[in-house]
Length: 397
Image (cartoon, rainbow, N blue to C red; front, top):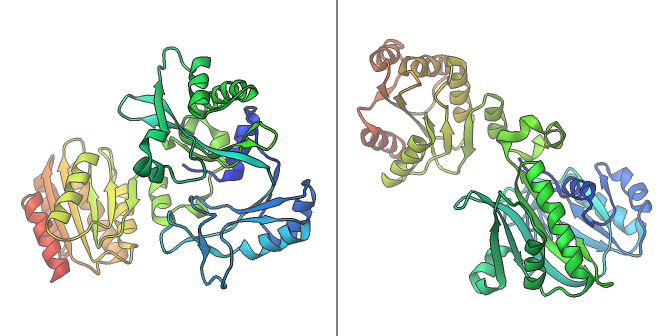
């Protein structure tokens, strides 16, 4: 689960990290009052969406010369006017895709004098199963660009969970970032605060880009992105309360309510599979036969008829789907439960596209009998390769 910049900064502030004062605005008429609560002489107006690249982004149907989603202003009235211009419009960045995201919140923040821009992130390192620090002197840029052009300017190391964060970790980062004097002590303290937040709140990612050295020589978190482990949200009601459902794909949101593992993709063949590994293999073989999967969907080993029905409805709600492949290997999951769910869903929402079903495993004969006796126009498949070939042929004609 991701949160907005202003929410991330509130969390940083609660852990003692240095951030600028700011005010969140959701209605244009609130903007002038919000900006008036902040000291000038510079006010920064930032569109709040769950995507990076806001400053370089553009608004849909933007006027010639119009600036992106981060704007520098020099008066309260100018800040209010820029906030008004952003609210309700669609911001397109390299991370949103061409559809963009609608701006429902704007953050007005006090300006900061910047001497240097640095990059800092804490991530879960899947290879070591540890929390890793990543830092670079090249702040304000996409870290992917830095890694491609100047990989030597990135320092990355993981923290042993037995010892946890230690001051020498902070000093290592400070030296890599070429900090001096009081900045080294500030860095050691800040890294400890960030590591504590990361661990206590079950973060998956915490990115400060840029981390700045101000014009008076102090460190400050100028921007912040945070993501959290969705599987741990049950023990963080305060974090769950920050969820902005308007930023999420409606299909993915609906799937989460039924405990379905669903990720929307851009292909034309909808997939319903049990087990993440089999789901990945199913998507791979669809690509092998010349088509693209429209989604990743793992119904899990303990799915009920109701969950399967909901999963099928989510797939069919995607207007890009031109065909559906149901691929079930029944171990814990029973094939007859899947078959009942598919039949119930088709009867409820109808079937406007080709449907290929491959069942194997527990109660497979019962499952096949349910499908065959349903009267549905279903294409049966004997194995995964056969199923993929048939659905691609049905979609491609």
